[in-house]
Length: 218
Image (cartoon, rainbow, N blue to C red; front, side):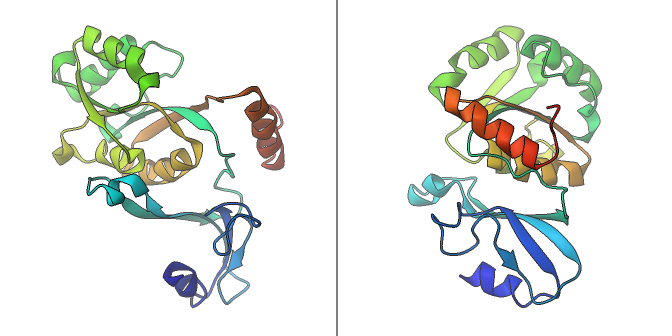
């Protein structure tokens, strides 16, 4: 309520592209809602009033309130599915490749950071789907730091040298990927994402969202 009220006090026209759900699922800050008290500037908003709600419920870390804003059309209205993610800070930007193995990526990242692979720390969501990835990271010689929730905060952490985290890897929510991408871009880092649909019917939803965004060849 407070976030929406504040938006409506600002001289801008904001369209929620990622919010609390579709119009029939969320009474406020729903996808497609217009906020603000002016017609200009026109902006898109990606919003998560509380990212990592379970962390708050259980008294854990990484819960944050997130707002990303940009010119109209600059933020992807991502469907509610999963994305494969690989994120690094500024020093290792432009060396990562989602089509390469995690072992190859870690070697390139380590070289860019002036470290050995054994000194590279990778944060991964603690999920059964990441069992193979975790084994591959450890086999490559890098360190693994598991988190229960909050990969947006983790993506930001890879851009902060004092965090001790060099890489975010794994599969997580697509809406969180958009929010993370906005933050990583500001810090000069790089995040690569690729849809990882859970079900066949997710594919149709993904195609519909991409077509609406004008990405017909995606």
